[in-house]
Image 1 (spheres, one colour):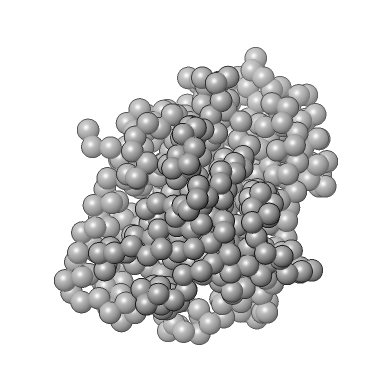
Image 2: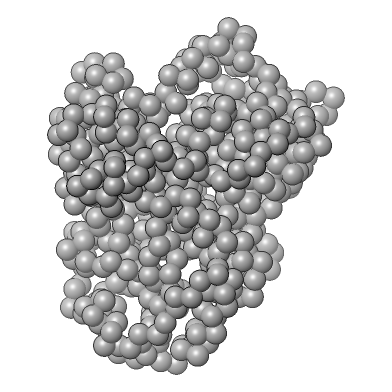
Length: 527
């Protein structure tokens, strides 16, 4: 991915590689999904992302691949069905990246839903998914799973399964598959404007700040997959405002403070919104909030002080003997959901999570929807673009992910579970990832399942331009290690010099940039 980036930009600057069948703007999961499906159909496809891949919403979700239990409870059967079927597909295609996990929905005396209502909802939920794994747990059984849980007014819990994922790695894996099928992608490649001739979109203008120039790229269709930013590009043709950016924030604490292996869902005492406490990458996460986000979208979203208090309170009410405070927080993250606004709901949590596609003179805009349904969203975008595209090539395999050519047991005989994780995250490239690194770099880092071999691979092959790309998205080491992963800086300095050709000055500049970003957007607000 990295060498192709350098070569592609050089060719564009020489006046080559300017004509495409499809230009996709936006490097989150929706854009990656569109690129994947376009490449499968034989289209000459290019993806452009103004920041890093998954920099926006797709590295800042709650990391859940789920069917949307609350959407079913709200009567949105279609969205739930699509989500559940896609969840099962992803679990089958990408084990080790998308993994099933048990959710415990605590039942509170006097609050809806009660045990009977939840049983009915989960019966339908499992039926749609084609599985049966929901069950009721008493207070005693729940205490065994979550020691110290507050049982005042607790009426047990309904348990069911959904799935967890590293959302940013999901984007990278989909891009990896797309490029293997002949597509191209560029990060840090900003589209300044659309190319319009005779009132029709015929391409996009790419900013090239390194050469103080612009590059005109031509295509019969441009797909705007910029999520919460969708109005910005679309408003060059259509003044309609449809996006309602909603912020969701999370806190990360050390696993030993609350060593959970499953997900606990409980209703917040202030507003009865569902709050999750769950395991992720060797830590425990508390989330999420759901608030209108009115800040500049080009500035990274960050948690507000009110959200910090809200989430700490949610945890402390549920675990009164394991009280936490701000000093216990390792890091935080906040993401902006690309929700399509309606005039019906003032409550952000009651906005629908459906996706929508709009066609404007050769610009196809797609936004909204859920992480889980990215494949279906991509298909709808391509259907909308169909009359402007050449005849697609036929294909028989519609899997998003190619199947690895090696088993987890053969990859890592001493630890097949970790081997499966690597296969899920890198596919068949996992073998080369390990072979290209020294054995010492195979060792897991701290409480995490990340290793330095993954860092070396990312630097060499995954278009890392900045240190924050590596520590916040290619891996999550900057979020799950204390002090933003400072213990790794000496090793990473040598690695970046060897793989990226950085000198001492560039390393220091990147380190300052990373630490500034972390303090401002991944720590707690300065009071």
